[in-house]
Image (cartoon, rainbow, N blue to C red; front, side, top):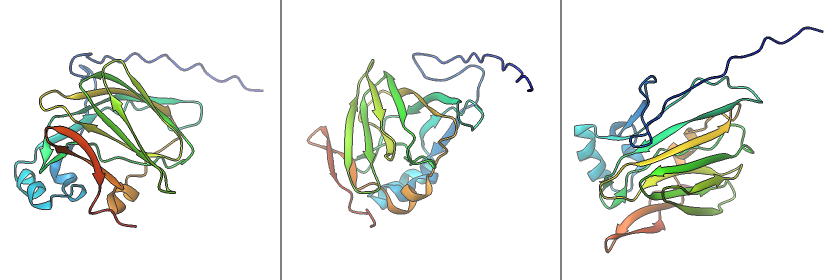
Amino acid sequence: MSATAPRPAVVTDFSLVTGLSQTKKPLQRRISAMAGMYADQEAARRLAEEDVLVYEFFDMGVPQSSGEVAYGTSITYPGKVGDEYFMTKGHFHSVLDTAEIYYCLRGRGLMMMENPEGDVQWEEFTPGQGVYVPGRYAHRSINTSPDEPLITFFAFPGHAGHDYGTIESKGFRKIVVERDGAPAVVDNPKWAQ
């Protein structure tokens, strides 16, 4: 019987104000990588010329194996493409039955969730509130603030993986747009079955 070598603890710095780390470099998603995901393609094209930063997040390099916990922060910036709020790409987990938890540190917005069978749910993000995303649900963060980043801390099983391709090709059934100065959840005119 061989002994398993102990693994060192990991300490990570995150600012509670910005969500950023002084020691880790974030992964960034600019509008050019997401333009096709928005309903208003002309507005997305105009923003893509400036290549606006939509969101950034941290991959902490946790081993992608069972028993590990991946975690980090996600910062979705304020803005809109047409009347649709800035959002993350959204993803399923490659291991479909794995869940994820998000804890809102700052800002406000929505967590949009959808399972393969078509059940759509959304929950509000406000500071101090956690949103549990059940297994089998694709999920995306949406910033509904006009002037403040949406900053969340997230954690999920290390072996969960990410499936961005399904969302890139099909989208979500619902989108979040501004109507009369407030967020509204509406049918996605680009959703593909």
